[in-house]
Length: 101
Image (cartoon, rainbow, N blue to C red; front, top):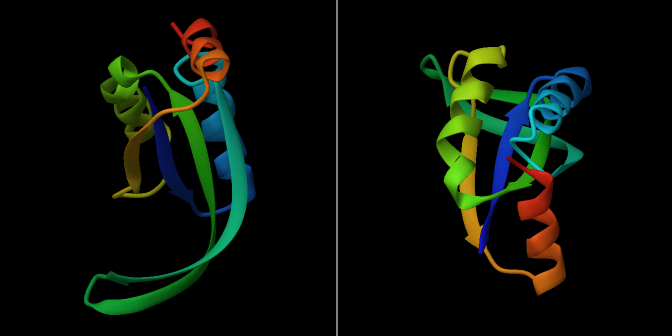
């Protein structure tokens, strides 16, 4: 088992910077970045924004470190960092374990 972590970002540039940092620090094995349209409550009003989401994959034991690092470098006051515990084929799970520290 490993984690898939969903993180929203204000721009593709920020998504790329955050995910590159996590990969370079070997906190995640890989990342996918997608454009999204978001609607959410913020400061008493509904906000509608174009955002980017990154989906990163890592080991379960790195959850806290990934959260700390994202919160440290992310421009949002309250970044969205959501995890799912998932399973994959054995070779892929081994690659994730081997690609992180």
